[in-house]
Image (cartoon, rainbow, N blue to C red; front, side):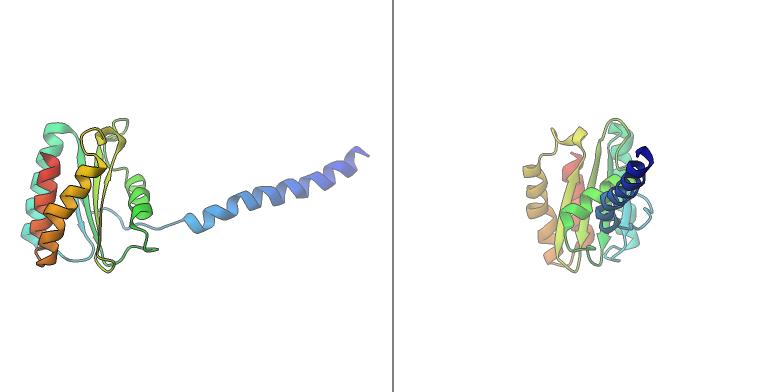
Length: 161
């Protein structure tokens, strides 16, 4: 009688384990490989824009250990910039381990969306309100004029200060 129960339970356990894994299949997102501080996959920036941003971010990291990553994409996979930003932030490990002092500026060109994702270690300094203000007052106005490098530089410099 003991064997009969085991044979009924084992398939049930296997099916249950399989079903627990199913939701994770849809969650898998492939991310581009980071190329440095500035990852212009949408080709919005000139080489001088990239150099200027890289210099600013490198200086910030040297002085504070905080890291900033800038990512431009033609479109946001799935269209949800908030989820994609969080997942990309975690996948790339932006910020120092244990300090969680990273910041991601993500631009989705096709959706005309900009998101600033802040690590827990910087949330006391860069609040959601401040991040939104930087987007509205520094980045978006320049983007509307087609000045993508200026917008990202001004926004990054404001956040760095």
